[in-house]
Image (cartoon, rainbow over all chains, first blue to last red; front, side):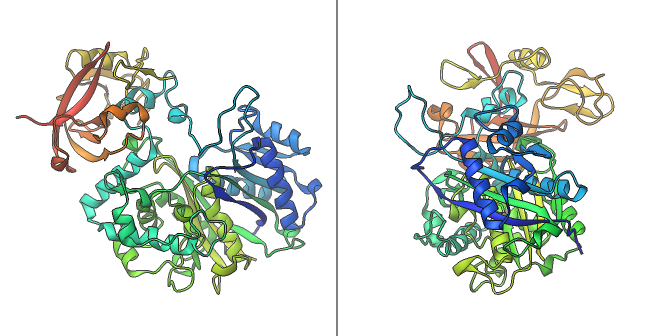
Length: 400
Length: 138
């Protein structure tokens, strides 16, 4: 069996929205998520002694200390994690490892993505999310700023499209196969009241007819950027016994990266997921055919295909057959995948989007997934994908 | 912060380490660093990414390669490229080993394919020369 030293015991998740009605600073949002997580777990605020953050706009440096001070913590484990879409997954295993070695007892993973209240001099109307130009990669001396951005390769979609192109030309995949991922995830989203697309079913034809973004990826094969937020609370196995819900052990984990930009990946369609998932399954002592739920990062449909292969559920080149042969729906599926609708169906609230795969695994294992609850869910596999198929974190979660 | 060309594109700002690459491009040469143990590498950097040795030398390559993968950016995901959309961007694997991100010039979209033989192509933009690729003419 895998690790049973640290468990996820509480969570909070805000429904992603295109426009957020109540602007909030990141520190304020972390405080709200902390209060909600502690209440969910049935724990006292004084028990929280670890905090993991990513860059906090109100304190781009010294983030953990800013958060600890704002929340009034006496914190023993303080960490910044910077792994793009894999940040949430990377935070969970770091928190679990810190708890296992005794660095802290209880740690909060919080990833809000909210608009801040506008400064006094700004009267701009509220709008959808805007990402900073180049995510800062045009800084003086940046390799990306000199050798990638000037070629027009600055955003995720064209990079993932290049992975899809190479896959298609080497192994051949029908557009209908990739579209099926989006369609069945959308079906699952219809059973998730927090999903942004909870009331809009789609068909294969809808996906094929949607706008071409970057060949061969279509609009309905890509996530919608949203505001939102999510958090999970971890504590020791001993303390977890006294919490409200079934403890969910972080049974195994793995992390791997080799590149930032896709051009410099050893192989753009044999991804770092392979090494991350292999380590996670080995650590957990879990067999791939024993999992009850797969919760795979799905910024684009092609990401799911590559993840199915590289996480070891089938051989390279056979992912299309796997998708054709399996049903991913929560109620009638033989291989439930992204039962919350994935980010394709739920919306991508910044790094909380990547975290949503794990909050769903926890909800399913705790029997709290509502209409989409699986009849049996004790063991689940999930992963986070950051950047251009770059940062990879795989986690195995297991119910106590 | 990026600097932008008169046509709106973001331009590279060479550093002391990368300047020889851009100087060679201005003279229509694809010049890369070569490590005596591990061969050519790209992008230009202070040490060989395989062995971290710093005894590399600049050497001209034949500028030939093939398309490793590509896409056609239909909507200009970078707004600075709005005037150019739709445009082809590719990863080119050079005969001498490394892979480069580059625009593909002089090529119909329907002619793009993985494995297409390409050659280096040079485009002067304001005061700098950008390396792109085009289908081999010979």
